[in-house]
Length: 247
Image 1 (tube, rainbow, N blue to C red):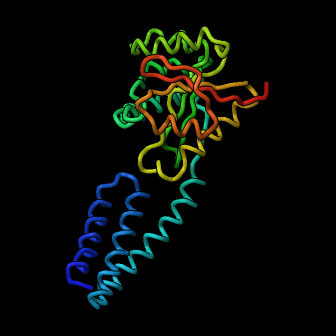
Image 2: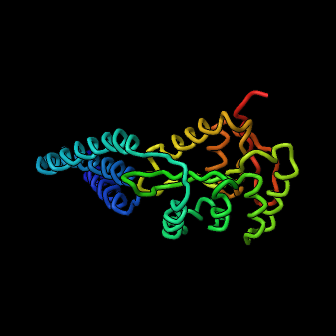
Image 3: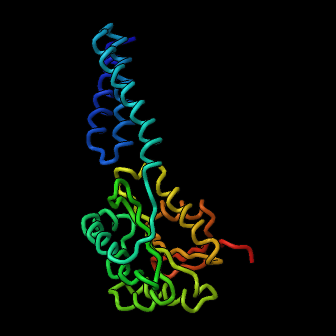
């Protein structure tokens, strides 16, 4: 093997380790660091540099153990709870801190919508770990849709809400967001969270709707994989429906 080829393993190892340190997600950090250490082990073997092999082999084991623990422990330690009473104020504080990240995925999100979903006008769930908010999901019922008209939403979003109110699904709750903080986003929690919501609502509603910005193609793909079907498109927004009960 040429010297240039051996050097490529060293460059690749350094690249993955350096990029891993930029990750907000602990899962991505561990995975990329694990890949980088693997390259370093190969690099060390090619150079017969045993200290490099031992050090990075140990780090590989540590990364692997932590990844296994993260998937086992972190998922089981989460609780998904309905938000009621003064808990909405705690959630609003969390939203203020995370608003910029929330709007990367849900550009139409506003605190006004979330307030409109409180009480009997909507459904709000909080994802909690260790007594702290780590995510949330919310939907507006018919009364919440009326209240949301006072929010400064885009014309396309208002048109989408109007279409929902005029449709045969006007009594179905309309979901707008299902958010998990970056630290835990890659643990499959969003899917688990959504599955619980569906099960909790199955006995109460025949269908649930979701309004999604068309620019959020990842969310659109995830919803369709969950069984949602596209009902219509209003400007930048698509309206999707999931049937919970058989007709």
